Length: 221
Image 1 (cartoon, rainbow, N blue to C red):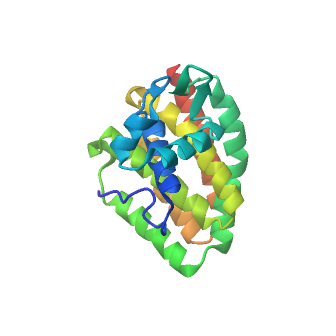
Image 2 (image 1 turned 135 degrees about the horizontal axis):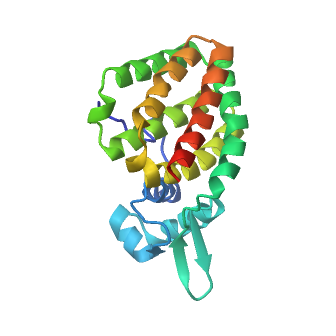
């Protein structure tokens, strides 16, 4: 299964926005390890964007709790603190079902067709044959698509932020999850419920998905 870029549906972006997205995804996929030092000059060379936009991006990422800056010490990727899981899940279990319900209720026909196509694409693949990065990119793509389909940019921004933090935890423990395929496999049913306009089912599946993720991680630790 081919995974499209995470921001494939985005229009033109500023250099700072492009830097923000590029660095954000490196942080949440743990390409930049937790607590690793971050040098704006090195990042600038790696992503091909000037240092000033990179610095602007790092300031935004600090608000997202993905990086932290210390006077005279520099900037670092934040640690992945498993104690944050309960706080993150407490927020997601309220907002993810809301987003799913909104999307099922108000998404236009073109968006619904896109959700169905995404579910078809996933079911045509083999979860067990996917490598770690593909699994995580799929998870990000489904959630970000659902948030956008909800049609509330403020809700979308909030959910992206907390799902990003949850994804770092997911990446850290993915190799130890016994039934990761079940968790990822839940996406197709959720997408189809939203596409069909089944608000009750979409809301329920979103809630089960979030609570199931927390339970799966806690079973490991």
